[in-house]
Every structure is written in C-alpha cells, then in structure tokens.
Image (cartoon, rainbow, N blue to C red; front, top):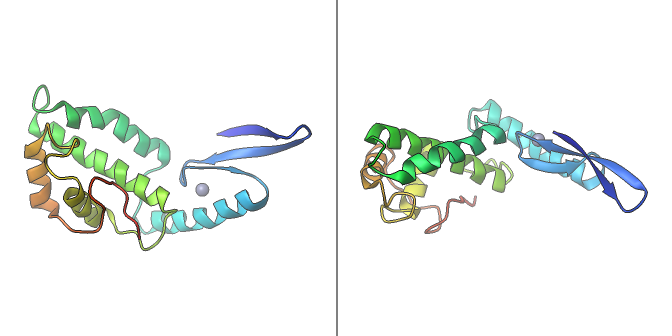
Length: 156
Ligand SMILES: [Zn+2]
C-alpha cells in the first residue's frame, strides 16, 4: 500500500505500509531506519518459521474465526470451534510478535499458546462460551506462566 503524506506546507514525503511488519513508515529519516531494523528481525522470524503470516492474513483470522469461537456450542460444532480457537491464537501470537517488534526472545507459537491459556482461563471472555475447547487446548498445549493475567501480550 502506497500513500503520500504532506508534512507542513511544502515538504511531501512518501509513506508506506509494510504487510510483514505491520508498520506505517516514511521513506526517509528515522522512520525509515527504524523500519529497516524491525524488518530485518521480521525476516529472520519468517525464515525460521516462527512467524508465518502477513498482517493481512492474521487480521483476517480474528475477523473470520473470532465470532465462531465466541458464538459457542450453537450453531458450531466442537471441531469448528477448536479450529477457530487455533486460528484466533495464531492471530494473537502474530500481534504479540508485532508489538514487541519481532524481538528474537519472544517465545514460539506453542509456548505462547500455553502461556495464553494460563493468562486467559476458562471463565475469560475468550472461552466462556466454549469451555470444552479450553479443556482440549490445555490437554494439547498445557499451561505455562509468562503472560500477565487477562493479557495476550508476551513481553520478552
Ligand atoms: Zn517491514
């Protein structure tokens, strides 16, 4: 996505959006240098398989699968809601990676899920309509300390 931003009255600079880093940045100066730095870390995370979606893709997951997870047992089957929960967790994981600017110390997806499950238990808004999905996720991923209660952000 390319757009033009006008700074002051005279100076016009290009503003870009990066779909990997989920960053808006200007093509010159400090902004551009910050994006280069973050982008290199994002590339490393992508090449190692730690992240695997672009912003367009992970934003879509929440919009599409969030309502299925939250709708509960009717009208969605356990399998549909379990699958939706995994997609929502991928969304939250990618958002957490973006928020810490792809810090290499951020945990991988499976550890993140275990931490999310401890921070957001069965009675949290994510799982209150799908306690069966919560239980199944805990059996598969276990729970682990590392994310603040009620939060979805891992802070390396
Ligand atoms: Zn980038």
